[in-house]
Length: 576
Image (cartoon, rainbow, N blue to C red; front, side):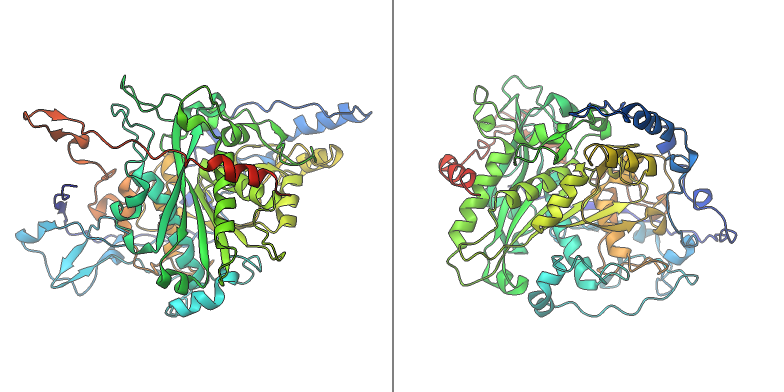
């Protein structure tokens, strides 16, 4: 692999400015950027008729349509946040210890450094150290100094951090160890984006850039203690067609499949000791395109087919993406995403069942990947693949970021009964967690009445606990109407890093590099001097051939399905 060239960073002195606090009692909407949510167009909601007719059907539907005219339940009129701290002056970005910059300070050549799991660092140098801007706000409550988080803490508390008590008392204020784990699992999800080949001119568009044997090493995450065991693929689905990326090259690796994520296991002895158990990790890729895929959602709930209870229903588009296979197409479409997950989890649980150690199953996902994470968690638990021979259950925990609603109330109740623990990180301005079911959801009073009459089969609802975040808290972020910025995963991790609790000042707790926010969007304040969308491959991957021509280099074939997949799948499907 050729070495990456050094990164050139332009840094200019940040001018001082003052900011007037908002008047007492002012609406949050007057402080925040104008929300585009009210102008969004969502697909209409086809109503699936109930299996039996009853006399109140006409009045029920009348109530439902009246709901759209009630201003108290309108997205446009509902406040987007419950509270917003006073704006933070950009003058607070400056460190009093910084010397006046000379002309040579404006151009700093910084070699690419491996920090935060191999993410390139944009650093301001001062002497032999580095300086990162930290926002302060005297109008908000001062949080106590966070205690140091050590490996011994996680080994002794991992079940609590994984949600055995539904994170009671850990979210506000946020537990420092929980924050670290939410960011760590978010990094595993971000790895899916950083390794995905989305270049339509590449014959490998839609695959992972790296083979599974060197996956974490290529991303600078070789010290994470995990090893990738399997890659996950999904067959093209017309219901969410805009989610997929396909090559325009006539020699494309596949015209019908996309790489969707991976299954990894903590293999390193030190990592197992630090975690307090062996962790089976499933990470789902989210949306690499803009959010047009939302328009493809048909917003129809249908039975999962994983159980005889037809009242447990999920969004049909998500379900189709999860269960679709096509043996007539390429090798990667032979097994559905569901079949790949069930086979691999069964294999791993059987492999480690005799080990004298505890196991956990952790599933992560961002955006649509969060929906696939929840479907796969429910599926694993419903099939009983997390139950050991002695009857003990392996805990299943989800950490999702900006995920949409997936199923109805019956689906939520079943997940809770099976013991699936879900912690959802949600930016209150992000529109993805508000779909599907813009009107037919459990927060709409009239919709809840309708849903009760229809035996809880029509209204969408979220599962698990919510960690509510607000990008307006961070003074590093600028005002923008670009809704894709509100949904960006690196921005989510930036908010988790700075969040301490409601009415507490926003301040980095882990010194996570703020430049990561602009990796694939334009959300950072221009006064920081950091370029937008800075992640790119040199010459878009072109290299010089032997005859001096610029060409896209050949890559080894993408890792496919293990040859024993059918064996473990058959065993998984026989589980009760």
